[in-house]
Length: 119
Image (tube, rainbow, N blue to C red):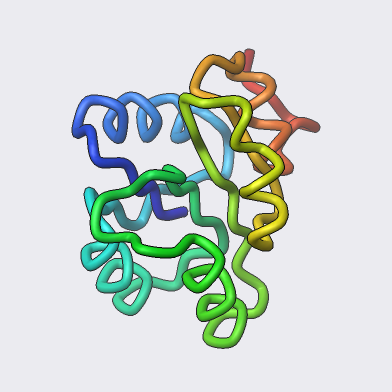
């Protein structure tokens, strides 16, 4: 999994939470769009958890389209502090959306990990 969020403590908290889940390994992280591209090129992630308003990310729809061509099996989950962005994220091609206010179980569900939640 690659976690992309501009805020270092958010990335760290998400990684700590996610890695408590059996079988989850965060293999990369990014604080901006350029770092995200580099992280995805240098890892073999199967899931991307990306903030919808990541700096240097001009167009979420273009990013997801490009990722689909390069890594068709990559599951893209959009994260946002603004729940109203759900429609925009899904329209852009995201597999799922999670709000920063959601519970850990809701996060695991959006990542398709709900069957074996550690909580």
